[in-house]
Length: 375
Image 1 (cartoon, rainbow, N blue to C red):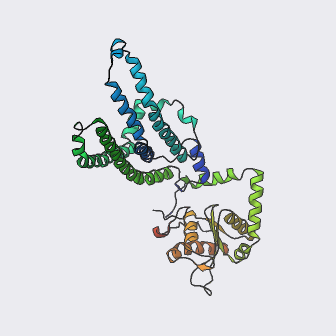
Image 2: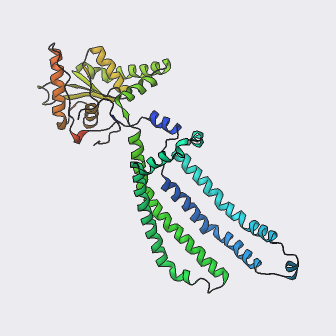
Image 3: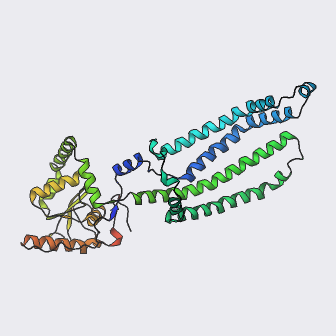
């Protein structure tokens, strides 16, 4: 497949992901955060609930007991303060862990960054037209569909819970107060746990979708990759360190392989493969050396030093890199593409100036920068 200039086909680099996170654009899954918070709440209700339940029982008993002094000096404010003093500690004991877990989950998604800029006022948040675009745009329709599916799933879980619990719930009111509160409390905990299970299923589906959508949004074009690479190498210290690493690599076995090569294919700075073709040795071109990162840059430096043709075919370079081993022939699926490049290189050696050939890489051997098959 020929690549269109400006087309964003490269996976985002670590720097692009880091810059996006600094701006508040991080991987988020509301469903996972909600599931985690509900799990913490359910765990607290199971282990700390008796504390709150006992305080509520005592409060209810005392509220329905009156003596002569309270009839003469009735102060409802005092009763309210007593109720608040009894229920506030266990409620805070629930609220504080939930708040901590919520903040921790969001900071984990944001790689530990707190982005204060997200708290700034943005007029687009209260602009009716912007809101309508968000609601009825592609993302809004996707979120609406997800919301409907979530309601169906969680509603089904709640319905099953009611079917399994309705007899005990309908029996509330026929026993003593402590027994009724215990049954109601156990029912609430079981409902929370059932809903948490549904939310975890939703989160397990939603998180990969959010990851794919975010990476697709942050994909980079060929030019953006080159610009970022130039920016990364801008400082004299970075240039000197990179040059030294390249010299170290070039002094190794790569130099010998490059002396045998006839041409080099690059992508444009992250991948490089050096090939040769000798029909007396093999029926197909052989990969003499391949590298990525510093090794690829060292191979390019050696190619310039040895006067080897260096051709930028990003998709083809990745395909050769991920399907071939050094000192072995190329993959059969790439015979046609490499044959076109080889014919061009041989024409250059004859002194001709043919146009750069358009290369078609078979779908079965197209890879992204991380080695994943791309479609």
